[in-house]
Length: 263
Image (spheres, rainbow, N blue to C red):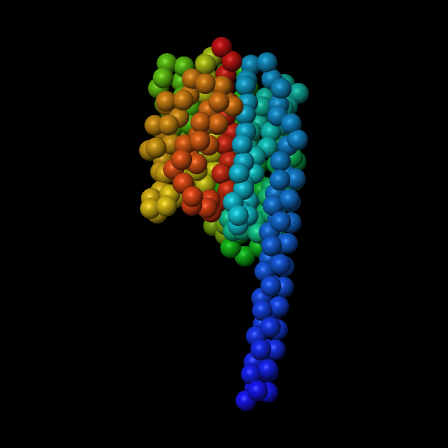
């Protein structure tokens, strides 16, 4: 009996070491995925005389794949991209890496739908099972905005007169097996207008009572704080989210891009 107890103790210790080793491996993989994800982000924001820009990303404990980027053409056109890879960990990071490379290649192309097609085609060829990329691309030239989206939350524009426009484009994420007829929306910007882009981690933020923040609360909050600078707006959105979730852990990445047309 003593020998059996000793054997059980040895087996239990070996199992504990194996579990710890697996936990250490997963922690290392998540850390690597987070570093990869953050390395894909631009080092500095565009410096434009007519636009004020601020960004924010908070990665979840379980790394997802949020992504944002910018490009300025020689003619002054600002191209903005915000995305959210499905899945988690290193695979999601791989999708973000591929998307960044493809965006860098096609950012100057004025045809957003063509760019979507090329990104989707390349992601399909990677054959990453059950992984795809939700993406939104905006182009701002002068006072004209052109945009399209694939599986992203709506772009919000708080006009200088206080009205809120919701630019929602329904579409499948890029890289999914089925093709989809993506659409383009156009609008005119005026001085004082503010654009808010976000990933779904913010509206789908849960509190300790398992209640979701929701899009209605996002709209209402943005309307109340939209007169501030983009940095102020993002700061107040972060505060609203923190107050909402309380002590509950954030389980998805949260990303904001806020752009205000300077008055």
